[in-house]
Length: 62
Image 1: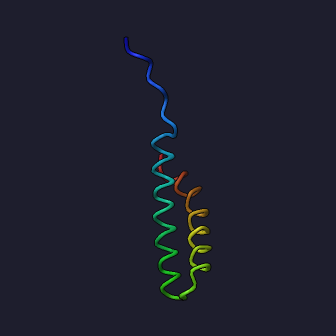
Image 2: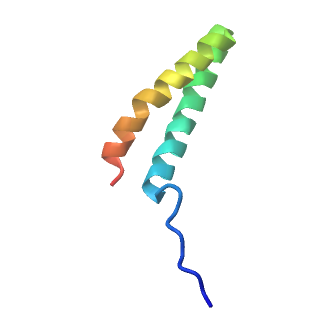
């Protein structure tokens, strides 16, 4: 009595793109914080870097 397997919540491609985008955002945010010392500025830089990198990574990683 095995039940049919459910499809994954997100695909492996999506997970890799999002995790890589988050790592890029963390790096940019950390470097911004170290150079400027402003936490809100670092968060905005990290979110901007992640937002820009996800579409690029989506097209590059196939």
